[in-house]
Amino acid sequence: MNESLSTADRQIARAAGVVMAGFVLSNLAGLAKWVLVSRAFGTGPEIDAFNAANRVPETLFTLMAGARWSRPSCPPSPSS
View 1 (cartoon, rainbow, N blue to C red):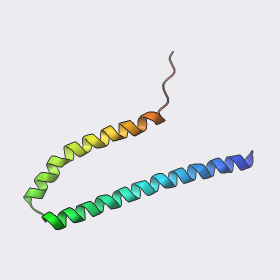
View 2 (tube, rainbow, N blue to C red; view 1 turned 135 degrees about the vertical axis):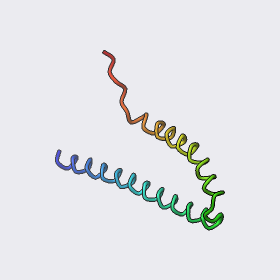
View 3 (cartoon, rainbow, N blue to C red; view 1 turned 90 degrees about the horizontal axis):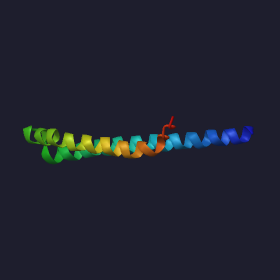
View 4 (spheres, rainbow, N blue to C red; view 1 turned 120 degrees about the vertical axis):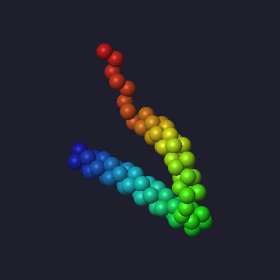
């Protein structure tokens, strides 16, 4: 019994590590994107307008993707 508990702990730790690596890679990719965009377009009012206009669709996509991926992990509520 003790061995199966440590196996479960290892699986949880491995899953947490995968999620953490995903967050790190996502943030590094975002940083690289901003570096490339600022090198290509500079810093000025045009790129500021683009970023402001692009923020709404990106936020909506993030909300929809988050809802999509969190849905299977939420158990259905029991009917009373």
